Amino acid sequence: MSRSPSRRELLAAGGAMLTLGPALAKAQAPQLPGTRPWFDAYLEAFNARDYAGFSAFYAPGLRFFGQAATLEGAAAVVDFYRKVHARIDEKVELLTFVSGGSARIAAELRTTLVAREDWPDFPTGALIRGQRRQSLNFAMYDIEDGRFVRIRSARFRRLDDG
Amino acid sequence: MAEPQAEVARFRDYIAAFNRHDYAALIGYYHPDIVLVIGNGTQLEGRQAIVDFYSEVNDATTREIEIVQAFADGEVLAAELRSEFLALRDAPDFTSGPMARGDRLFINSFALYDLRDGLYARIRAAVFRREWRRVGQSEAAR
Image (cartoon, rainbow over all chains, first blue to last red; front, top):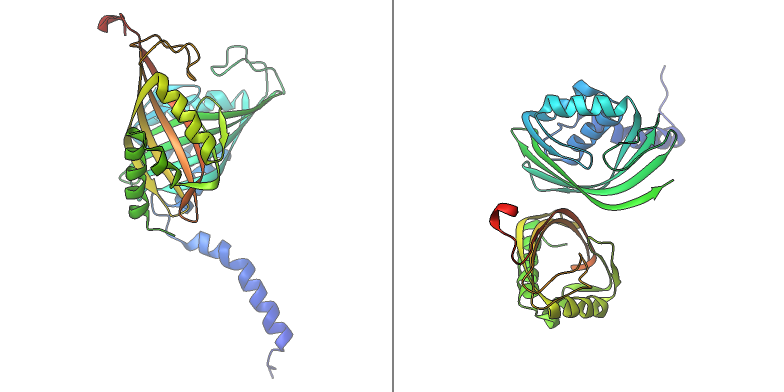
């Protein structure tokens, strides 16, 4: 025979639901283009070096204006990052997110680079193995049909160059 | 918290006040604890410091700001701005570099405005593109 749950058990179950709630909500939420969960998913794939995953956010004709390169086409951007990530560990953190609906996003990003080898002619300045470089950047993303068609990044501040 | 569209409309009024050098109006948009960090890293704290800074800049140059795009989510307003500076006299100490009378500087910047109590509490701008048009410089040379 089953017994009724005690008050303590009910409270514990409620706590568990509260803990699981955000994760479940994230997993089940429709990731509408231009929303924070959608952008989080993009950055998560980027930081995981999931090239197929993050390039799914790119329109074929993407125009990319980054700190280290100006590129045209999703394939060129993916190729660029494959080459960069072979020599540098890169992590991007979202500090500020502003949605302009489904057509545009503004983001404040903290980018951390750690050189895996010497790269004397790295576009934003020579790197030596083990060197860590961190910067704050403001980025603008234009979205069409649920994909980025233009990404532009402006350096706000270099945090260190140790 | 203002609606995003109302916030953008208010921002357009703010930029209009900026363009006509209406400093008394500008102060009304700033939180008392405002911090402003412009593209060259200059940091200004407090309403009066900002007004004093722009008064000095506008003494040597004219600056016209065009809003390329602006949008807000209630807590932060994001804007892409295109500024045109024209040197009214030689300005060797201009914040973005020396300017000779008649020189023009065009800057595209991305700016974030943090909102608190309906006022701008923190303004930060990063330069995306900078283009100089010097006096005597031909079209072909640009």
